[in-house]
Amino acid sequence: MKSQHSQLATNKNETIIEVSSLSFNIKHNSILKNLNFRVGTGEIYALLGGNGAGKSTTLKTLLGFNKPTQGSVKVAGKEVTQALDFVRSKTAYLPESATLYPHLTARENVEYFLSLADIKKNEEQINAAFDRVALQPAAWDRPMQTYSKGMRQKTAIALAILREAPIFLLDEPTSGLDPVAIDEFNQLVRELALTGATILMVTHDVYGACQVADRIGLLRAGELVGEFEAPKGTRIDTEQVHAAFAQRGAE
Image 1 (cartoon, rainbow, N blue to C red):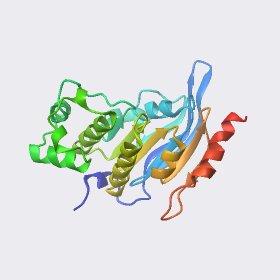
Image 2 (image 1 turned 135 degrees about the horizontal axis):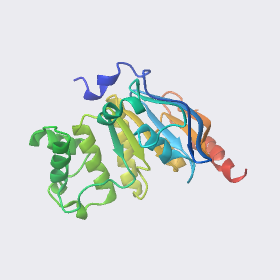
Image 3 (image 1 turned 30 degrees about the vertical axis):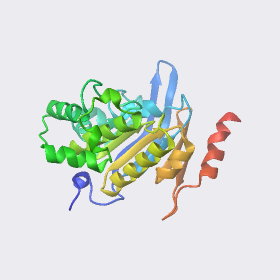
């Protein structure tokens, strides 16, 4: 069956996210400096960096909350600043803490946010999305305030799947999760990529990035100072990335 995520591109090499010569200044402070990277359909790209590296600023620019000082940001071939509604309709943004109503159940949250987007899904489709993200059936009709962070993340991903969003922007998605929840989340992200979703995640977790990403961009003080790619059939070398990441403390 053809995935809904394939609607923006037909091959894995097609660029879905394209950041070109991107600079962003606040007054006289350079937050992003001549940033260049691309993410193809079905690809997981991790933007890795420490606090203040510019990771979240990059995501906010992709979502249209920041206007580039210089350069361009394109999503699905459209300039973000010129096609904001289109870009946001195709993008699922998962912040570090998913914003869901604690007094509502997972099902009620999903139904409510789908209604805001004027998307109609029946009970069977919602159940299938919960199954796909491995959210246990016993939890579907429990208030969100009883959920762990990992369960809230799964609910947010299920919502994105139901919205048929082909692009995922993930901001520190595994922060605060236990090792089992991290493994489950990484597996889910890999499965989404296999269906054709384009995934950009920002993180400070070297090990986690190496475990899940096809490529890693190392961000330091707003500049992309290196890229790492997983050899076919393997994962990115953690020691190599950690050594490059650790250099920031020696400069």
